[in-house]
Amino acid sequence: MQKATPRVAVYARYSDDKQQATSVEDQIRRCREVAARYGLAIDPELVFSDSAITGRESGEKHREGFRRLREAWDARGFDVLLVDEFSRLSRDAVTQAKLQRQLENDRRVRMITADGVDTAREGWQLQLGLHGVMAQYESRRTQFRVPRGMQGQLERGYMIAAAPFGYDNARRFDDFGTRIGTHWVINEWEAQIVRKVFEMREAGSSMHQIAAWLNTEGIPCSRGARTEDGGYWRPSRVKILLGNPAYRGVFIWHGSTTYRSRMEKLGDPVETVEYPRPELRLVSDETWFRCNSRSISRTGYGGGKHVLAGLVTCGFCRGTLALTARSKRSLSMYCPACTVAKAVKGVPRLTSTVRATGVQQVLSEAIRYFLSPEFLQAFRHSLDLRMNGDNQGEIDACRSRLDKLRATQERLSRMLQHVTDDDPVLEARYGEARNQVVETQRKLAELEAARAKVNAADVERQKTVDPAAELVAIFDAELPPERLRAVLARLFPQVVFVRASRHSKVGRQA
Image (tube, rainbow, N blue to C red):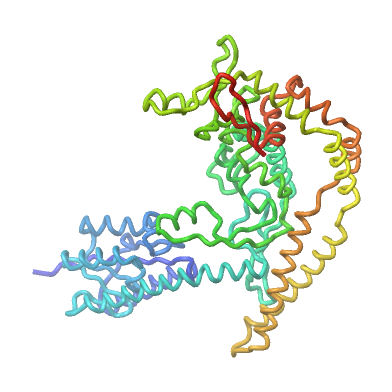
Protein backbone atom coordinates (compact mmCIF):
# COMPACT_ATOMS: atom_id res chain seq x y z
CA MET A 1 0.00 0.00 0.00
CA GLN A 2 1.43 3.39 -1.02
CA LYS A 3 2.07 5.80 1.85
CA ALA A 4 0.08 9.07 1.70
CA THR A 5 1.99 12.22 0.81
CA PRO A 6 2.45 14.31 3.97
CA ARG A 7 0.80 17.71 4.08
CA VAL A 8 3.37 20.38 4.91
CA ALA A 9 2.63 23.72 6.62
CA VAL A 10 4.93 26.71 7.11
CA TYR A 11 4.82 29.49 9.70
CA ALA A 12 6.86 32.72 9.57
CA ARG A 13 6.81 35.84 11.71
CA TYR A 14 8.81 39.02 12.06
CA SER A 15 8.61 41.68 14.73
CA ASP A 16 9.75 45.30 14.90
CA ASP A 17 12.43 44.44 17.41
CA LYS A 18 15.29 44.20 14.92
CA GLN A 19 13.95 42.58 11.76
CA GLN A 20 12.73 43.91 8.44
CA ALA A 21 9.59 43.24 6.44
CA THR A 22 11.56 41.00 4.03
CA SER A 23 12.27 38.67 6.97
CA VAL A 24 9.03 36.73 6.34
CA GLU A 25 10.05 36.03 2.74
CA ASP A 26 13.53 34.97 3.90
CA GLN A 27 12.06 32.61 6.51
CA ILE A 28 9.73 30.99 3.98
CA ARG A 29 12.64 30.61 1.54
CA ARG A 30 14.71 28.77 4.16
CA CYS A 31 11.73 26.55 4.96
CA ARG A 32 11.48 25.66 1.25
CA GLU A 33 15.17 24.69 1.31
CA VAL A 34 14.51 22.43 4.33
CA ALA A 35 11.52 20.89 2.56
CA ALA A 36 13.67 20.18 -0.51
CA ARG A 37 16.28 18.38 1.63
CA TYR A 38 13.62 16.17 3.19
CA GLY A 39 11.78 15.57 -0.09
CA LEU A 40 8.68 17.42 1.09
CA ALA A 41 6.26 19.62 -0.87
CA ILE A 42 4.77 22.69 0.84
CA ASP A 43 1.05 23.28 0.41
CA PRO A 44 0.62 26.98 -0.61
CA GLU A 45 -2.66 27.09 1.32
CA LEU A 46 -0.84 26.06 4.50
CA VAL A 47 1.64 28.96 4.57
CA PHE A 48 0.86 31.15 7.59
CA SER A 49 2.60 34.39 8.57
CA ASP A 50 2.39 37.43 10.86
CA SER A 51 4.13 40.75 10.27
CA ALA A 52 5.36 43.39 12.72
CA ILE A 53 3.98 41.55 15.77
CA THR A 54 5.96 40.55 18.84
CA GLY A 55 6.33 36.90 19.79
CA ARG A 56 5.67 37.63 23.46
CA GLU A 57 2.36 36.86 25.14
CA SER A 58 1.14 40.45 24.67
CA GLY A 59 1.18 40.01 20.89
CA GLU A 60 -0.56 36.64 20.59
CA LYS A 61 -4.08 38.06 20.37
CA HIS A 62 -2.99 40.10 17.33
CA ARG A 63 -1.36 37.18 15.49
CA GLU A 64 -4.00 36.16 12.95
CA GLY A 65 -1.62 33.82 11.10
CA PHE A 66 -0.69 32.00 14.31
CA ARG A 67 -4.36 31.62 15.22
CA ARG A 68 -5.15 30.04 11.84
CA LEU A 69 -2.13 27.73 12.20
CA ARG A 70 -3.41 26.48 15.57
CA GLU A 71 -6.87 25.92 14.12
CA ALA A 72 -5.44 23.89 11.23
CA TRP A 73 -3.29 21.95 13.72
CA ASP A 74 -6.29 21.11 15.93
CA ALA A 75 -8.25 20.07 12.81
CA ARG A 76 -5.35 17.79 11.71
CA GLY A 77 -4.93 19.86 8.59
CA PHE A 78 -1.20 19.05 8.17
CA ASP A 79 1.39 16.44 9.07
CA VAL A 80 4.64 18.43 9.03
CA LEU A 81 5.28 21.96 10.35
CA LEU A 82 8.29 23.89 9.08
CA VAL A 83 9.59 27.02 10.84
CA ASP A 84 12.84 28.93 10.53
CA GLU A 85 13.41 28.65 14.29
CA PHE A 86 11.30 27.81 17.34
CA SER A 87 11.20 31.45 18.49
CA ARG A 88 9.12 32.30 15.39
CA LEU A 89 6.23 30.38 16.96
CA SER A 90 6.59 32.10 20.33
CA ARG A 91 9.02 33.72 22.75
CA ASP A 92 6.66 33.26 25.69
CA ALA A 93 7.63 30.45 28.10
CA VAL A 94 4.05 29.32 28.75
CA THR A 95 3.15 29.18 25.05
CA GLN A 96 6.39 27.33 24.28
CA ALA A 97 5.57 24.73 26.96
CA LYS A 98 2.07 24.24 25.52
CA LEU A 99 3.48 23.77 22.01
CA GLN A 100 6.03 21.23 23.24
CA ARG A 101 3.32 19.30 25.10
CA GLN A 102 1.13 19.31 21.99
CA LEU A 103 4.03 17.94 19.92
CA GLU A 104 4.61 15.20 22.51
CA ASN A 105 0.93 14.25 22.81
CA ASP A 106 0.15 14.42 19.07
CA ARG A 107 3.00 12.67 17.27
CA ARG A 108 1.13 12.74 13.99
CA VAL A 109 2.54 16.25 13.54
CA ARG A 110 6.29 16.51 12.98
CA MET A 111 8.03 19.86 13.44
CA ILE A 112 11.28 20.68 11.65
CA THR A 113 13.20 23.92 12.07
CA ALA A 114 15.83 25.39 9.78
CA ASP A 115 18.28 25.54 12.69
CA GLY A 116 18.28 21.77 13.27
CA VAL A 117 15.34 20.71 15.47
CA ASP A 118 13.44 17.61 14.25
CA THR A 119 10.80 16.07 16.52
CA ALA A 120 11.24 12.75 14.73
CA ARG A 121 14.68 12.37 16.30
CA GLU A 122 15.42 11.05 19.76
CA GLY A 123 16.10 13.71 22.39
CA TRP A 124 14.50 16.53 20.44
CA GLN A 125 12.88 17.84 23.66
CA LEU A 126 16.24 18.89 25.14
CA GLN A 127 17.28 20.69 21.97
CA LEU A 128 13.90 22.42 21.66
CA GLY A 129 13.97 23.40 25.34
CA LEU A 130 17.41 24.99 24.96
CA HIS A 131 16.25 26.90 21.89
CA GLY A 132 13.18 28.06 23.81
CA VAL A 133 15.24 29.28 26.78
CA MET A 134 17.53 31.21 24.43
CA ALA A 135 14.49 32.78 22.74
CA GLN A 136 13.11 33.86 26.12
CA TYR A 137 16.49 35.30 27.09
CA GLU A 138 16.73 37.24 23.83
CA SER A 139 13.21 38.57 24.40
CA ARG A 140 14.21 39.87 27.84
CA ARG A 141 17.35 41.45 26.40
CA THR A 142 15.23 43.16 23.76
CA GLN A 143 12.88 44.43 26.46
CA PHE A 144 15.92 46.07 28.06
CA ARG A 145 17.61 47.36 24.89
CA VAL A 146 14.55 48.96 23.32
CA PRO A 147 13.70 51.30 26.24
CA ARG A 148 17.38 52.16 26.60
CA GLY A 149 17.55 53.16 22.94
CA MET A 150 14.30 55.10 23.16
CA GLN A 151 15.50 57.09 26.16
CA GLY A 152 18.77 57.76 24.33
CA GLN A 153 16.79 59.27 21.47
CA LEU A 154 14.97 61.53 23.92
CA GLU A 155 18.26 62.68 25.39
CA ARG A 156 19.48 63.50 21.88
CA GLY A 157 16.44 65.72 21.35
CA TYR A 158 14.37 63.36 19.21
CA MET A 159 10.87 62.00 19.89
CA ILE A 160 9.90 58.34 20.23
CA ALA A 161 6.14 58.22 19.70
CA ALA A 162 3.65 59.16 17.03
CA ALA A 163 2.94 62.88 17.02
CA PRO A 164 -0.31 63.75 18.84
CA PHE A 165 -2.98 66.10 17.53
CA GLY A 166 -1.36 69.48 16.92
CA TYR A 167 1.97 68.16 15.65
CA ASP A 168 3.48 66.36 12.65
CA ASN A 169 6.37 63.91 12.48
CA ALA A 170 9.55 65.20 10.82
CA ARG A 171 12.05 62.42 10.18
CA ARG A 172 15.77 63.23 10.16
CA PHE A 173 18.31 61.40 7.97
CA ASP A 174 22.09 61.36 7.86
CA ASP A 175 24.22 61.91 4.76
CA PHE A 176 23.80 58.25 3.79
CA GLY A 177 19.98 58.33 3.89
CA THR A 178 19.73 56.42 7.17
CA ARG A 179 17.02 57.65 9.50
CA ILE A 180 18.58 58.86 12.75
CA GLY A 181 15.49 60.14 14.54
CA THR A 182 12.18 61.97 14.44
CA HIS A 183 11.22 65.44 15.61
CA TRP A 184 7.73 66.77 16.21
CA VAL A 185 6.86 70.02 14.47
CA ILE A 186 3.81 72.15 15.14
CA ASN A 187 0.91 71.74 12.73
CA GLU A 188 -0.44 75.28 12.79
CA TRP A 189 -4.01 74.41 11.80
CA GLU A 190 -4.32 71.69 14.42
CA ALA A 191 -2.47 73.85 16.96
CA GLN A 192 -5.19 76.50 16.66
CA ILE A 193 -7.77 73.83 17.49
CA VAL A 194 -5.75 72.71 20.52
CA ARG A 195 -5.50 76.28 21.82
CA LYS A 196 -9.25 76.73 21.31
CA VAL A 197 -9.95 73.54 23.29
CA PHE A 198 -7.83 74.79 26.19
CA GLU A 199 -9.50 78.20 25.95
CA MET A 200 -12.96 76.62 26.14
CA ARG A 201 -11.98 74.40 29.04
CA GLU A 202 -10.41 77.28 30.94
CA ALA A 203 -13.61 79.27 30.42
CA GLY A 204 -15.58 76.48 32.10
CA SER A 205 -16.86 74.40 29.17
CA SER A 206 -17.38 70.74 29.98
CA MET A 207 -15.69 68.03 27.96
CA HIS A 208 -19.08 67.07 26.56
CA GLN A 209 -19.50 70.62 25.26
CA ILE A 210 -15.99 70.70 23.80
CA ALA A 211 -16.50 67.34 22.08
CA ALA A 212 -19.83 68.54 20.67
CA TRP A 213 -18.17 71.68 19.28
CA LEU A 214 -15.35 69.69 17.67
CA ASN A 215 -17.82 67.31 16.03
CA THR A 216 -20.06 70.16 14.85
CA GLU A 217 -17.05 71.85 13.24
CA GLY A 218 -16.18 68.59 11.49
CA ILE A 219 -12.68 68.40 12.95
CA PRO A 220 -11.20 64.89 12.55
CA CYS A 221 -10.02 63.41 15.82
CA SER A 222 -7.40 61.06 14.42
CA ARG A 223 -5.28 60.72 11.31
CA GLY A 224 -5.60 56.95 11.49
CA ALA A 225 -9.35 56.77 12.10
CA ARG A 226 -11.32 53.87 10.66
CA THR A 227 -13.83 56.17 9.00
CA GLU A 228 -13.17 58.61 6.18
CA ASP A 229 -14.42 61.59 8.20
CA GLY A 230 -11.74 61.03 10.85
CA GLY A 231 -14.00 59.63 13.58
CA TYR A 232 -15.90 61.37 16.35
CA TRP A 233 -14.64 63.26 19.36
CA ARG A 234 -15.77 61.89 22.71
CA PRO A 235 -15.34 63.46 26.16
CA SER A 236 -12.72 60.85 27.06
CA ARG A 237 -10.64 61.79 24.01
CA VAL A 238 -10.91 65.47 24.93
CA LYS A 239 -9.67 64.60 28.42
CA ILE A 240 -6.68 62.77 26.93
CA LEU A 241 -5.87 65.77 24.74
CA LEU A 242 -6.03 68.19 27.68
CA GLY A 243 -3.82 65.94 29.78
CA ASN A 244 -0.98 65.69 27.25
CA PRO A 245 2.04 67.53 28.75
CA ALA A 246 3.51 68.06 25.26
CA TYR A 247 1.20 71.06 24.89
CA ARG A 248 3.11 72.80 27.70
CA GLY A 249 6.44 71.88 26.11
CA VAL A 250 7.34 68.75 28.08
CA PHE A 251 7.61 65.06 27.13
CA ILE A 252 7.36 62.70 30.11
CA TRP A 253 9.16 59.38 29.83
CA HIS A 254 6.95 56.64 31.36
CA GLY A 255 4.18 59.18 31.83
CA SER A 256 1.39 57.38 29.96
CA THR A 257 -1.54 55.88 31.83
CA THR A 258 -1.07 52.61 29.90
CA TYR A 259 2.48 52.21 31.20
CA ARG A 260 1.46 53.13 34.74
CA SER A 261 -1.35 50.56 34.66
CA ARG A 262 1.01 47.84 33.42
CA MET A 263 3.57 48.61 36.13
CA GLU A 264 0.87 48.56 38.81
CA LYS A 265 -0.14 45.06 37.73
CA LEU A 266 3.51 43.95 37.92
CA GLY A 267 4.01 45.69 41.25
CA ASP A 268 6.93 47.75 39.91
CA PRO A 269 7.49 51.43 40.77
CA VAL A 270 7.07 54.03 38.03
CA GLU A 271 10.00 56.37 37.54
CA THR A 272 9.25 59.28 35.23
CA VAL A 273 11.72 61.64 33.57
CA GLU A 274 10.75 65.01 32.08
CA TYR A 275 12.37 66.09 28.81
CA PRO A 276 11.84 69.79 28.02
CA ARG A 277 10.62 70.51 24.49
CA PRO A 278 10.00 74.28 24.61
CA GLU A 279 9.65 74.49 20.83
CA LEU A 280 6.45 72.40 21.13
CA ARG A 281 4.69 74.64 23.66
CA LEU A 282 1.13 75.61 22.67
CA VAL A 283 -0.27 76.81 26.02
CA SER A 284 1.18 78.27 29.21
CA ASP A 285 1.84 76.16 32.30
CA GLU A 286 -0.82 78.14 34.16
CA THR A 287 -3.46 77.32 31.56
CA TRP A 288 -2.45 73.66 31.29
CA PHE A 289 -2.55 72.98 35.03
CA ARG A 290 -5.78 74.91 35.50
CA CYS A 291 -7.48 72.91 32.74
CA ASN A 292 -6.30 69.66 34.35
CA SER A 293 -7.42 70.56 37.87
CA ARG A 294 -10.75 69.57 39.40
CA SER A 295 -11.73 73.17 40.12
CA ILE A 296 -13.50 73.88 36.83
CA SER A 297 -16.25 71.31 37.32
CA ARG A 298 -16.91 68.46 39.67
CA THR A 299 -16.16 65.59 37.30
CA GLY A 300 -14.57 67.40 34.41
CA TYR A 301 -17.43 66.32 32.16
CA GLY A 302 -20.62 68.04 33.22
CA GLY A 303 -20.92 70.75 35.79
CA GLY A 304 -24.67 71.24 36.09
CA LYS A 305 -26.99 74.06 35.11
CA HIS A 306 -26.62 75.99 38.37
CA VAL A 307 -23.60 78.20 38.93
CA LEU A 308 -22.78 76.50 42.27
CA ALA A 309 -23.08 72.93 40.97
CA GLY A 310 -19.92 71.03 41.83
CA LEU A 311 -18.21 73.96 43.59
CA VAL A 312 -19.02 73.35 47.28
CA THR A 313 -17.36 70.49 49.18
CA CYS A 314 -18.61 68.71 52.30
CA GLY A 315 -16.36 69.45 55.27
CA PHE A 316 -17.06 66.01 56.78
CA CYS A 317 -16.60 63.48 53.95
CA ARG A 318 -15.02 65.75 51.29
CA GLY A 319 -17.81 64.84 48.89
CA THR A 320 -19.51 67.35 46.61
CA LEU A 321 -22.69 69.07 47.72
CA ALA A 322 -25.75 68.63 45.52
CA LEU A 323 -28.65 71.00 44.93
CA THR A 324 -32.27 70.25 45.70
CA ALA A 325 -34.87 70.25 42.95
CA ARG A 326 -35.96 73.65 41.66
CA SER A 327 -39.55 72.78 42.54
CA LYS A 328 -38.67 73.15 46.21
CA ARG A 329 -39.60 76.37 48.00
CA SER A 330 -35.97 77.47 48.06
CA LEU A 331 -32.95 76.00 46.34
CA SER A 332 -30.64 74.43 48.93
CA MET A 333 -27.38 72.49 48.98
CA TYR A 334 -26.78 69.25 50.90
CA CYS A 335 -24.34 66.33 51.02
CA PRO A 336 -26.00 63.22 49.53
CA ALA A 337 -23.21 60.91 50.72
CA CYS A 338 -23.61 61.96 54.35
CA THR A 339 -27.39 61.80 54.12
CA VAL A 340 -27.33 58.20 52.86
CA ALA A 341 -24.61 57.14 55.31
CA LYS A 342 -26.52 58.45 58.31
CA ALA A 343 -29.77 56.83 57.17
CA VAL A 344 -28.18 53.43 56.51
CA LYS A 345 -25.46 53.17 59.16
CA GLY A 346 -26.73 55.61 61.77
CA VAL A 347 -23.31 57.27 62.08
CA PRO A 348 -22.81 61.01 62.72
CA ARG A 349 -22.63 62.87 59.43
CA LEU A 350 -23.15 66.36 58.08
CA THR A 351 -26.82 66.34 57.10
CA SER A 352 -27.68 70.03 57.34
CA THR A 353 -28.55 72.09 54.30
CA VAL A 354 -27.53 75.55 53.22
CA ARG A 355 -29.43 77.85 50.89
CA ALA A 356 -27.83 78.47 47.52
CA THR A 357 -28.60 82.18 47.80
CA GLY A 358 -26.81 82.20 51.15
CA VAL A 359 -23.70 80.67 49.61
CA GLN A 360 -23.76 83.29 46.87
CA GLN A 361 -24.07 86.06 49.45
CA VAL A 362 -21.13 84.68 51.46
CA LEU A 363 -18.98 84.52 48.33
CA SER A 364 -19.93 88.08 47.38
CA GLU A 365 -18.93 89.32 50.84
CA ALA A 366 -15.65 87.40 50.60
CA ILE A 367 -14.90 89.14 47.30
CA ARG A 368 -15.50 92.54 48.91
CA TYR A 369 -13.23 91.61 51.80
CA PHE A 370 -10.30 90.38 49.72
CA LEU A 371 -10.42 93.10 47.05
CA SER A 372 -9.10 95.74 49.42
CA PRO A 373 -7.39 98.95 48.20
CA GLU A 374 -4.02 97.44 49.16
CA PHE A 375 -4.74 94.34 47.08
CA LEU A 376 -5.83 96.38 44.05
CA GLN A 377 -2.69 98.49 44.28
CA ALA A 378 -0.51 95.36 44.32
CA PHE A 379 -2.51 93.97 41.39
CA ARG A 380 -1.89 97.05 39.24
CA HIS A 381 1.78 97.00 40.20
CA SER A 382 2.03 93.40 38.98
CA LEU A 383 0.53 94.51 35.65
CA ASP A 384 3.29 97.11 35.31
CA LEU A 385 5.89 94.41 35.95
CA ARG A 386 4.35 92.25 33.24
CA MET A 387 4.58 95.13 30.80
CA ASN A 388 8.23 95.83 31.58
CA GLY A 389 9.52 92.34 32.31
CA ASP A 390 9.34 90.70 28.86
CA ASN A 391 12.33 88.40 28.22
CA GLN A 392 11.81 87.57 24.54
CA GLY A 393 15.39 88.53 23.65
CA GLU A 394 16.81 86.09 26.18
CA ILE A 395 14.50 83.36 24.88
CA ASP A 396 15.58 83.95 21.27
CA ALA A 397 19.26 83.77 22.25
CA CYS A 398 18.67 80.54 24.15
CA ARG A 399 16.85 78.99 21.18
CA SER A 400 19.69 79.95 18.85
CA ARG A 401 22.23 78.34 21.17
CA LEU A 402 20.08 75.20 21.42
CA ASP A 403 19.91 74.86 17.62
CA LYS A 404 23.70 75.08 17.36
CA LEU A 405 24.22 72.55 20.14
CA ARG A 406 21.79 70.11 18.53
CA ALA A 407 23.61 70.42 15.22
CA THR A 408 26.90 69.65 16.97
CA GLN A 409 25.34 66.68 18.76
CA GLU A 410 23.93 65.24 15.53
CA ARG A 411 27.29 65.66 13.79
CA LEU A 412 29.10 63.80 16.59
CA SER A 413 26.38 61.12 16.58
CA ARG A 414 26.92 60.48 12.86
CA MET A 415 30.67 60.25 13.45
CA LEU A 416 30.16 57.66 16.20
CA GLN A 417 27.96 55.55 13.93
CA HIS A 418 30.78 55.16 11.41
CA VAL A 419 33.59 54.47 13.90
CA THR A 420 34.47 50.77 14.03
CA ASP A 421 36.78 50.89 17.08
CA ASP A 422 36.24 52.53 20.44
CA ASP A 423 37.10 56.23 20.46
CA PRO A 424 37.05 57.53 24.06
CA VAL A 425 37.76 61.11 22.99
CA LEU A 426 34.88 61.19 20.50
CA GLU A 427 32.54 59.52 23.00
CA ALA A 428 33.50 62.07 25.66
CA ARG A 429 32.83 64.96 23.27
CA TYR A 430 29.46 63.47 22.38
CA GLY A 431 28.60 63.13 26.07
CA GLU A 432 29.50 66.77 26.69
CA ALA A 433 27.39 67.91 23.73
CA ARG A 434 24.43 65.84 24.91
CA ASN A 435 24.64 67.28 28.43
CA GLN A 436 24.82 70.81 27.03
CA VAL A 437 21.71 70.17 24.93
CA VAL A 438 19.78 68.83 27.94
CA GLU A 439 20.85 71.76 30.13
CA THR A 440 19.99 74.34 27.45
CA GLN A 441 16.59 72.69 26.93
CA ARG A 442 15.95 72.97 30.66
CA LYS A 443 16.98 76.64 30.66
CA LEU A 444 14.75 77.42 27.69
CA ALA A 445 11.80 75.68 29.35
CA GLU A 446 12.28 77.84 32.44
CA LEU A 447 12.39 81.01 30.35
CA GLU A 448 9.27 79.98 28.43
CA ALA A 449 7.41 79.20 31.64
CA ALA A 450 8.44 82.48 33.24
CA ARG A 451 7.52 84.60 30.28
CA ALA A 452 3.94 85.82 30.28
CA LYS A 453 2.40 86.54 26.91
CA VAL A 454 1.74 90.24 27.27
CA ASN A 455 -0.75 92.18 25.21
CA ALA A 456 -0.25 95.89 25.94
CA ALA A 457 -3.84 96.88 25.12
CA ASP A 458 -5.27 94.12 27.33
CA VAL A 459 -3.01 95.07 30.22
CA GLU A 460 -4.01 98.74 29.97
CA ARG A 461 -7.69 97.77 30.05
CA GLN A 462 -7.07 95.67 33.15
CA LYS A 463 -5.40 98.64 34.85
CA THR A 464 -8.39 100.92 34.26
CA VAL A 465 -11.15 98.49 35.22
CA ASP A 466 -12.34 98.24 38.83
CA PRO A 467 -12.30 94.50 39.70
CA ALA A 468 -14.18 95.05 42.95
CA ALA A 469 -17.17 96.63 41.21
CA GLU A 470 -17.21 93.95 38.52
CA LEU A 471 -16.80 90.91 40.78
CA VAL A 472 -19.18 91.95 43.56
CA ALA A 473 -22.01 91.91 41.02
CA ILE A 474 -20.79 88.67 39.46
CA PHE A 475 -23.97 86.73 40.28
CA ASP A 476 -26.07 89.36 38.52
CA ALA A 477 -24.07 89.05 35.29
CA GLU A 478 -25.79 87.26 32.44
CA LEU A 479 -23.10 84.63 31.94
CA PRO A 480 -23.49 80.93 31.15
CA PRO A 481 -23.22 78.90 34.38
CA GLU A 482 -20.09 77.07 33.24
CA ARG A 483 -18.35 80.38 32.50
CA LEU A 484 -19.32 81.82 35.86
CA ARG A 485 -18.20 78.62 37.61
CA ALA A 486 -14.78 78.93 35.98
CA VAL A 487 -14.40 82.46 37.36
CA LEU A 488 -15.50 81.40 40.85
CA ALA A 489 -13.15 78.40 40.77
CA ARG A 490 -10.21 80.72 40.13
CA LEU A 491 -11.29 83.08 42.91
CA PHE A 492 -12.08 80.29 45.39
CA PRO A 493 -10.07 77.09 44.74
CA GLN A 494 -12.09 75.40 47.50
CA VAL A 495 -15.46 76.27 49.02
CA VAL A 496 -16.15 73.99 52.01
CA PHE A 497 -19.36 73.51 53.99
CA VAL A 498 -17.60 73.12 57.34
CA ARG A 499 -20.13 72.36 60.05
CA ALA A 500 -23.66 71.25 60.65
CA SER A 501 -25.65 73.30 63.11
CA ARG A 502 -28.57 75.63 63.25
CA HIS A 503 -26.25 78.36 62.03
CA SER A 504 -24.41 76.54 59.26
CA LYS A 505 -21.56 78.32 57.60
CA VAL A 506 -19.58 78.11 54.43
CA GLY A 507 -15.80 78.30 54.68
CA ARG A 508 -13.27 79.34 52.09
CA GLN A 509 -9.92 77.59 51.71
CA ALA A 510 -7.21 78.78 49.36
